[in-house]
Image 1: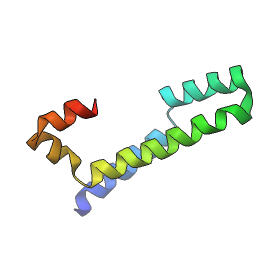
Image 2 (image 1 turned 90 degrees about the vertical axis):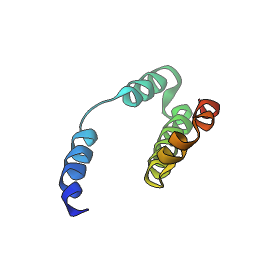
Image 3 (image 1 turned 180 degrees about the vertical axis):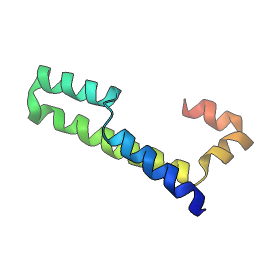
Length: 75
C-alpha cells in the first residue's frame, strides 16, 4: 500500500500544474459569459470530478467488470 503513495503524489502534483480540457472549457465559458455565469460550470466540474474519483476509489470498476450492462447504461 505504501509503495503506491509516491506515484500517486507525483501524479497529483503533475495534474495540478497541467492544463486540461476542463481548464479550456472554463476559460472559454468565462470569456463568453463572464465569471459569474461560469461559476456553476466550475462547481459542476469540481463536484463531478470528486464524485468520479470517489466512485473509482470505492471499487465501482470491479462492479462494471462483473456487470458490463451497468457500464453501458451509465454511458
